[in-house]
Image (cartoon, rainbow, N blue to C red):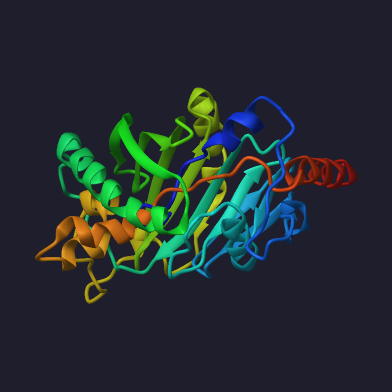
Length: 290
């Protein structure tokens, strides 16, 4: 779960959720994009995330490593961040989750969350970040409000929130479900992308996988020791811009615009029928493991 990691399943979410055949699309090189050609690791398996954590990939799910996720982001027109991302999804592709690790240090969890102030920052930062999307000829993001407000589970060291947005000019509603899992040396950032109408079911499905996630030995939040690096910010900045927000004494929104430009994920309708091909491929591999 990394810096406000991109999370929005736009038009594709609607297509996938209703089982419709996607339209054709092109990859960055001008050829037809086929996500079934990516190196998916089909469950049951173990997904290794940034050498910091592992997650169980059960039967019926698939995991994509850093190199494959970079290609997937290109196909989906998602700007890539500086670090690696990893993908976990069910075989019916009804939702996607993107993992990344931010080595910001130990984040203290004693901060009160002011939802209205946080949302205002997200709106302004996202508006500013749309400049990059326009320059690339991509659709822009416009924040509608909270799908649910930020909440923090102190026992699990888990921060979560969901933001509803609209993509222009297609006017599709999209939703972000974000989770941050606090560790000893940083934060695992997760973004779940789903059809707004199916968000609750997607979150419940995803949360069923969380017990299979664990930081490696020496990386757990409870293993903090005096002298470890402590982050310069708290929980609210994990939502609004992290280090970029803190470092910027001037031009706050310009600073977090770069951050938020990489904080929304789009899943494009199409990818050369790759969705149907990937579903078929995952279904065969899943059947073969029985």
